[in-house]
Image (cartoon, rainbow, N blue to C red; front, side):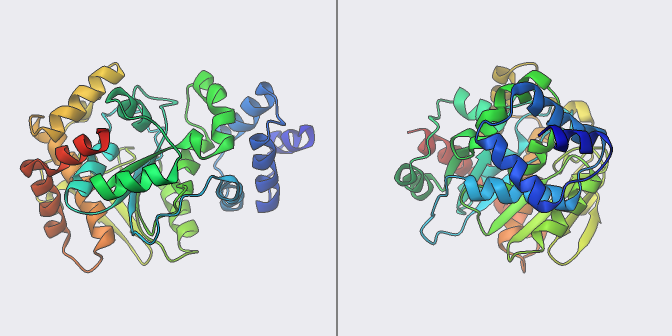
Amino acid sequence: MKNILNRLYNHETLSRKEAYETLVKISKGELNEAQMASFMTVFLMRNIMVNEIQGFRDALIELRLPIDLKGMESIDIVGTGGDGKNTFNISTCSAFLVAGAGYKVSKHGNVSASSVSGSSNVMQYFGYEFTNNQDTLLHQLDHSNICFFHAPLFHPAMKTVGPTRRQLGVKTFFNMLGPLVNPAQPKYQLFGTFSMELSRLYQYILQENEKQFAVVYALDGYDEISLTSDFKVRTHFNEKLFSPSDLGLSKYAQSDLHGGESVKDAAKIFKNVLENKATQAQMDVVVANAGMAISCMKPDANLTDCMEEARESLVSGSALDSLKKLMN
């Protein structure tokens, strides 16, 4: 490991194989805390290369506890985090709108490493019990149209580095990897990234397979459709710049999406959205992301129609019903 660190300090890059081998060592607990912290912070000093993120992803996918959804097609809606915006849990909330609209959602998430509330934080707040039992997860997916994968239960490396990530308190390359390593590897995915460069990397990497995906990045730095600025959407075949008005929605201030100062604050907003009691900005941003997710699963459909499906799920109470069913 000393040789790898010295090379990285000298601005060298890792091959895909070297990146893979290093993540395997991390998963096996072969690096001490100082080595893990040093390794992670290197990639805060420079952009991660395609071959490096591919190697890291290869290792996590190979070492994961896989989940077989028995032929059920599903979508994951997930952001990298690390955008420093401290929003409420937009992606997770959007997932329940999609589930309420009748689509299967296999949501991958974790506790927050750099913001107030990650998806696992808010799910745990509402009483969800994390599990990696396949039968339980399949029952949840069938019963409520959604199941939740708490990353450390499926990825040994994420469990190993969790304490170090929390102590660092900043985004690391594990933020970049999380969305790519869903244990079920669903056919459909909506990703949010914290930088334009990372959105390009995602598009390049995802074009290796047959997934239907959209990668979004808001030009003012959000890892989701924030409606606070124009946003770029990259798919398997193209890329397009949208403005909020293209979705028939207003542009909002960043303060409109603030998630509060605690998990309790974020959870209150989350519940208000699903109960159709939140602010217009909070509900619109969730509808926008859910509509984009639905359009991933229906590539020939009009995006406006997909957003209407998402809003109907919210207004009718179907999204809230999916949350209640999941928690029962």
